[in-house]
Picture 1 (spheres, rainbow, N blue to C red):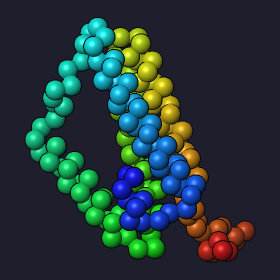
Picture 2: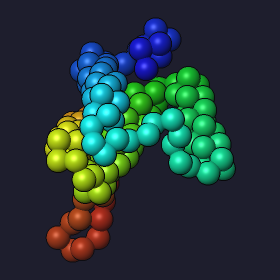
Picture 3: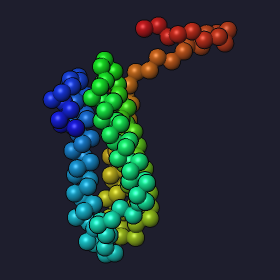
Picture 4: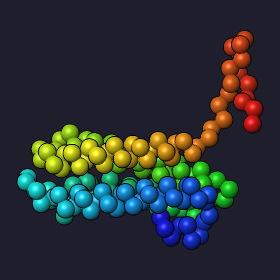
Length: 146
């Protein structure tokens, strides 16, 4: 993600938050790999996914990268949305793994990781401003004033 900031500009608070998300993801991966040797050990030499799923994930990643690189004025919004989606996925995956994990130390680490990425998601969402129709007393709706 650092490379994209050399090509595209976003506001300082957004760049800081996106960098924090990336740093937390890298730190989480390091923690998971370190804990893989705890009993029962976890094998990371295979992701266990079918080839079509791996190909689909690569395709999605390439499409997201392309859309971010080609985004004009909507770059910051698209960046926030992609990061928010990634945080939802990481949080859900870590939470699901924590529930299934038999090693208490690894389960606690995964639970904390899920909690951290839920918090990041909430921070990212707080930067999104969506104009919602405002209901009038008569029940009709009108656009919210800008």
